[in-house]
Image: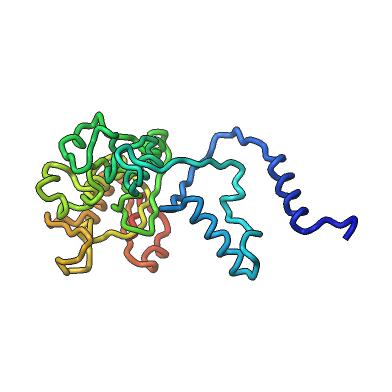
Length: 263
């Protein structure tokens, strides 16, 4: 009808006006929260937006996902130094440490090849993550994941290894002899042992698993250590309070603690 805007045109004008009114925020951030959706590229993002809209009875393109309303956005290329199609370990290293690396490696630069234990022991090849930078600035840090806390994506925050599979000593084998497994690094090394909040799966890799099946594909500790108890002892010895919870009820009962491990 004459004199009336079509709904699509009105929506487009509103979007343009909102974009033109964005002003840079030059304040110092009080904190930083990183949400990492594994494999969350443009295609998955578009599919998610459409599905969200269709569940509301629309065609699917009318709506938006929350992060599509952020004032700033950027695209990056996901590839490894030695492979065009990357894996989660090396891409997480790039995302969290800012350096491209080799396929299946974690927290190390491209001088460390896949399964090269000796090269990974050279601290000159170790990378610092955004989590470590935050700790060095006196900030509290936390790690929450829907997978194992020793899995490739979260492990890039704290581990340095030539093989993402070395989640516990049971997977080191001959090729990993002399290297620390990822779970051990989390509990005994910096910056892992200084993370204030850790939540996720992976009790088995820490030696506190409930599944006695030796054929389970998840890494099983062979050294007899229970790293959850070592985590608690370390915090107590350093004069901190610490809580280890394995159920939602135990987590809800926590009122105040310096360190929290929920698995």
